[in-house]
Length: 455
Image 1 (spheres, rainbow, N blue to C red):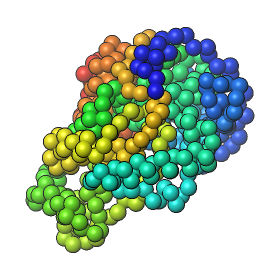
Image 2 (cartoon, rainbow, N blue to C red; image 1 turned 90 degrees about the horizontal axis):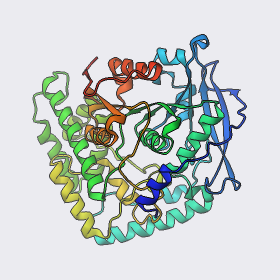
Image 3 (cartoon, one colour; image 1 turned 90 degrees about the vertical axis):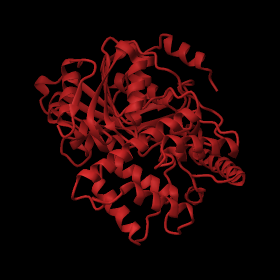
């Protein structure tokens, strides 16, 4: 594992710009003007003359070419959300203003979808153990399962399995910038894509024109406990926002009832062994519904299951291991330490008990090579980074956004949407206007700016 000093020294050294590569565009997507291409990059950026892969890239040309500013590259979340689909099909992701003034470009990150997707045995993936451990035997079995799964994935995927980390993605992004003929990067990242924007700004500050970080990831957690506690706080905060909505909204299926008591009753029944859903299933469904502000669906589900309806099982989780485990050092020595982490989480979140992201601890249990470990950001861009975050977001909590703003200092400004949900640019017209003005005119809002809920 690289030390933090090594990472920071590498970030400070001048890095040669990649040589622009010719891109051959072809028509694709659901709109007549959408285009696709492939960008060839090394599997291992440490060996640029070695094996290559092709990254899938999508483009939506600017609608007002006479007033075009340049190219806006969108960094998808996930990790491993399909960026190409967002660019060539998901036009609702961007405002009309941005569609007029920029070519919108995105890509499938290495190891995903159209970019040499990681391959694993489906039967092994389906056999994944329950993500919340309850004994040392569970711990040992999960560790053995992970090692067997990873060996199979590496055999099927090839050497890319060992080079799907954020550092490699940053080099890919800079190669894409150069291939597009952009002297400086204009970027909007969402959720896990914000980590890509942060890492790029840290490594290539002189190549940044403007970077928007929407729903902000904080990559500074010093320990597994700190990571889990931060995620737990966000989950409980979002749950509290849902409860408050239900209390004030007559249309809520649980309006007039003690929502917390209903939740606790369902959680306790799952712990007791209710056969139709587990505690993790309940937490994960609540996480998803609060993240998407599907409060009516969450309330209806809780009311129905509390009334005797069958609960929902989540099923197998997607394999995004080298895109997450190689970016986060989350060691757990044994079950005793693991149980202590969950007790600490429950103290932070007496209702939710633990966040859905607890599965990251078990999914990465035993991962040995963390290529992009956590550290405080050291960003010194000419234009401050623009951070956007909802006040209540179960996926990327406001606590994370505030921490990143503090790390950036004068090189970052946070704008808060005083409402709920993940992805405030697509939720709030006010947030979109601020982001558009920043991307088009480099207009940096004053520190402390916020947008009221519903605006």
